[in-house]
Each structure stands twice: as structure tokens, then as C-alpha cells.
Length: 347
Image 1 (cartoon, rainbow, N blue to C red):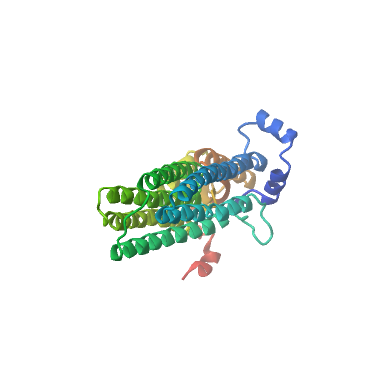
Image 2: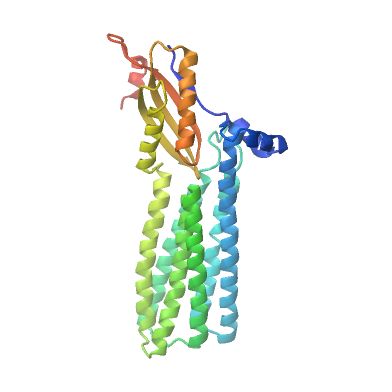
């Protein structure tokens, strides 16, 4: 009895990505539960498209926010607000590496990049985390500078209005990116949403500082700045956890339990051995071992492995490929069929 492994050929995925055609769409309509490569690629492509759409929409909102602030800067000549507008405009540019990562992730796997380019998303997430860290450092530096040299904020009504616009725009973008990021499974998009939230906090600092100055409290501005720095540090912790867990191949343990239950329910599967899940960009891959009857033919074992993969594709959202290896159930007195590998797996 030979062990069996089953997976999908990415070269077909690449071709399907380039030729979606009418024939493929008709086939998809006629066989909605089919899980051949072309059908499975559609949700993955749709996820990338949704991610790109989230970036474009949020960039447009951030652009309008920055222009609103710039108009008030031109009228009021407020240096505090100028700093906030420039900061918001510059930070909106973190969407660029993430957009590049989404575009790269659509490319077919090659002989060099055999798993495709999905990991580019993790690198974009790292850039975003570093940008949030820079935001926290900048906010702390500005707040300490204002503590040492307190100054009243000029043009208070205009500054307050523009700062409010900055906060509202960024918070809306933050919620939108985080929601879409969670739905499509993109840690980097969630991190970019958290990043927009830090930008909203800096606008809030300007707003609260202006309010304090209006009440004659010149220290309000730097004290609020320090409080906002602490808030940004908390957001940084969340974003770093999101991105670093993904870089270390972490998955939700509940997802692993769900996958195991789905495979155990497949007729012919006696036990589920090792089961591994990993993210590549915003797509999941699975590798697992199933124990089947030792007397089963290769064809029967293959059929069970295919059915196990089919069950996984239904049970685990955003899963695009699974590698299923069938082991024969041990017979009394039989030596372990993996004994020849033992000396390679130690240490």
C-alpha cells in the first residue's frame, strides 16, 4: 500500500487567471460545487480585487480629507494643522506597498516562486508596522517639544474644523480597511486600517489641543499629544501582533479544530494525523495526513484523499489548496512504514 498525496497544479491556476473566458463562467454556473482549480481561483481573485477596491476607496477618502485640511491651512496659516495635513498625506502612501503586494499576489506561481507571491503582503505589513512606529516616535517628539516650549494655537475655529475632518476621515477609512481585511483574511490590510486609526488620533490631538488653547490651557496641547502617543503605542501593539503572527505562520486554533472535524467526518478516514494550515498572503493552504484501511487499493485511498480535500474546501473559508497524504492503518506486528525516514526527522 503506497502513501498517497494529492494537490493542485498552480500552472493551471495561472492559466485560469489569465483566461477567465465565457466558457469557464458557464462551466462555473453549471457546476457550482465543483472544486477544480479554475473554480477555486475565483474566490481568491475576488478577495484580491476586494482588497484593491478597499485601498482605492480609502485613498480617495484620505485624499479628500487631506485637501480639506490643506484648504484650511491656506486660509489660517496654522503650523500645527500643516504638520497634521502633511503627516496624513505622507502616511496615506503606505497603501502603495500594499497595493503592489495585492497585484503581485495575483501572479501565477513560477519554478522559482513555487508558492506564488502571496508573501509580499507580509512584507507590506511589516512596512506598515514600521510606519506606525515612526508615527508614535514623531508624536512623542512633537509632544515633548511642545511641553518644553508651550505655544498658543492660532486660528482655533479653522484648526478645530480641519482636525475634526482629519479624525472622521481617518476613522472611517480605518473601520473600512479593518472590516474588509478581516473578511478577505489580509493581515496587512487590517494593519493598514490600524495605521489610518493612528492618523485619526494625531488629528484628534490637534483638535483637543485647540480646545485646550481656547480655554486658555497652553499645556493642553502637549499633554494631549503625550496621551495620543500612548494610544498610538497600543495600536502599534495590535498591528505588530497581527503582522508578526502572520509572518510566523500562525492560524486561529479554532480553524484547525474545524478542519479536523470536517476531515474526520469523511467516510473511510479512520484518524487525522498531522494537520497544518498556513497563510500565503490572504489565502490558506493545508497539509494533512489521514489514516485509511491498510487493505484499501491505491484508487480507494486516492478517492478518500480527494473527498477529504473536498470536505476541507467546504469547511475552511479562503482555503485554496490542500495536500492530503494517506497512511495505512497499522496491522498487528507490522513495522512502522515510516521507519526509513526516522533518522532524517530527528534533531
